[in-house]
Each structure stands twice: as C-alpha cells, then as structure tokens.
Image 1 (cartoon, helix red, strand yellow):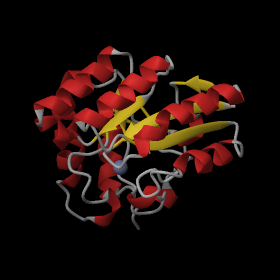
Image 2 (cartoon, helix red, strand yellow):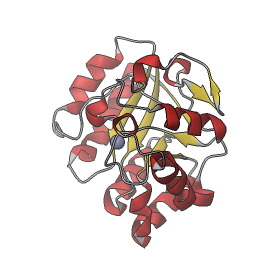
Image 3 (spheres, rainbow, N blue to C red):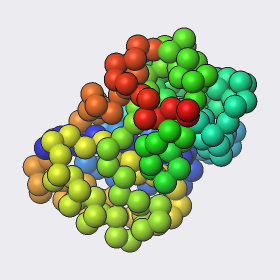
Length: 213
Ligand SMILES: [Zn+2]
C-alpha cells in the first residue's frame, strides 16, 4: 500500500511548522500546495522556505482560493489565479510546476477547470495534481484519522489531501503517521499516475468530467 501526502491551503506559519516537525520526526516527505497570497506574510513565507529546504515539494494551489476555475468566464482568471500565484511562489517551486486546482469540498467535477485554464496549464507546462483521498480534516478535525485509515485500505496508492490550517486537525498527524508505520504503508513523494491528468503541459488523461461545459 503506497501513500502520498499533500498539505493544501497553507502556509500558515504555526501549523505548517508543526506539520514540518511531525514529518521530520517520521522522515516523511510530502508536497505542500500553497495558496500563494499567504506568502505575503513573512512568517508564512519562512515556513514555506523551511518546507522546501527540508525536501518537501512546493506546488501552486491558486492565488486566492476563492473561485473555482470552472466557475468563471473571466479570460484573465488563469493568469491571475495560476500565473500570479506561481510568481509569488518564485524559486520555492518544484522543478516540475505543480498546480492543484481549488476543488470546493474536495469534489472532482466540472467546476475544477475551464477551457481557458486548461489551455493555460498546457501552454505553461504545468503538471496538474489531483487527489483520490479526502478525509475532510477541515470539518472533522478530531475524527479524520480513523476515516482516512479505513479509506486507504480501499486502494493500492492513495494521494491524501490534508490541510495545514489552524483547525486542530494537524494535532492528530503524529497518530496518523504512527498508524501508517504500523500498517507497513510505503510513504512516497511521487503521485499516483491516475491523479495526474496533465504532466509538464501534456494531457495524459481525458479531463472532460473536470471541465466547465
Ligand atoms: Zn484547497
């Protein structure tokens, strides 16, 4: 059983630091998908720099995380929400430009991307990273661990979405990682291929179900 860990919507300095401490304790490497606007706070930027320095990958999770790309006809939205975010992330970014769209509630549907945003990702050689395991840590901060552990057993390779946000959920990250060790799970930093529909701008899987009509 392979597990890939991702942390979305940060950095939020205190919680991101707590997550980094926990990952370091377990010698685990993850990917942080940043809401780039958060980087305007120097403490948050320092937390993201620490993550990159400790071998975690840094990806783009939009500039503001306020509007789904498939929910707007604004032709400038991809440049703002993807391009400006990448500019703020700057040299913290992984060599592969990793982008994760905002999926309200973790739902993979036609609001995820627009045709213009898809073209933008292809033209700028982004790698689009989705997910297959969303344990709802943000709205069930005390109970996500057990739900996630049960869900992981349903597939060979899970790409888990967690959030380094001040919900209290990350206080349970140590128990989660302990449980993964007990299960003999193989914690990897790569992404399961079926969660990566676009790699370096190349469309690898159909995305019709993720596109606004
Ligand atoms: Zn998000």
